Image 1 (cartoon, rainbow, N blue to C red):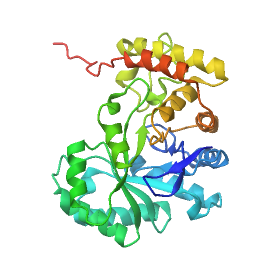
Image 2 (cartoon, helix red, strand yellow):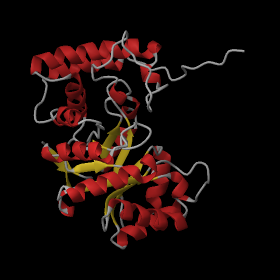
Image 3 (cartoon, rainbow, N blue to C red):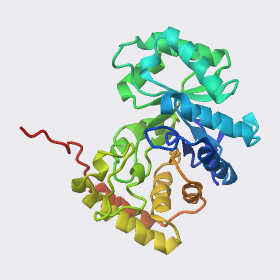
Image 4 (cartoon, rainbow, N blue to C red):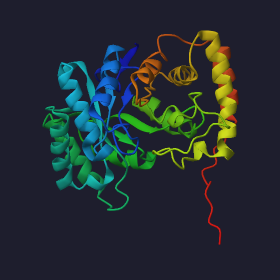
Length: 320
């Protein structure tokens, strides 16, 4: 496993993390023992960075993660735990209550990285009020670092202006080999400011792993149901990229998923993908995406094909 730093001078984290959205009804992994085996495999493969959120399974993900780490005998300082607070919970009153409950579910005394999951667009909580509450939690030792997820740059700038003694350490957004919008302004902003960039859905919810083909697109019963990436009009384009990932993978003895993640970590030294996993073998596959590098020619070949992919998100229609 390769390691880097969270932000400019944060703790040492694995270059590939483990996302735990899977531990929820959204993905269907609701059996604790299966989740524990995935976490065990991550630790065995050198992964020490775990990303969860308060809303994943209404706390189930945090509970599973914290319980597994304790039962596996992991010392608190050996792992870096990142969770996220939703925009709904960003009133100053709810900030403290929400973090207290998150700490209890995780069974820890502090959260390494607390990320703003999305802006409070429904309740219009005043930015500086909730940012000062979050900064107070850092001063009180309940949170070590702050980050943002799914925030526009303008709102990040406003939030940063409210902080008096600290700054953000990370940014988390949807980013993968076929959905590259983050390259336009988000990744450059992260690089300029020394923020770790955490791609969620780095394998496009499994679309680029090679498991599916245009002739084998099952009717998903989880969060992938209705995802535009799997719509036939888009998956025909995605498949062109997958075929290149397979060809490059054969050259290096790697899977399409490993090639896709390796391409991302080569794109920027600030990128730390956090793929999820429902099975231990998927964790092993993800961990094998680092510790090697494809050559520049292969990187460019993938870049050229994927750069021409345009995912259409308006894929459903109303017929009268």
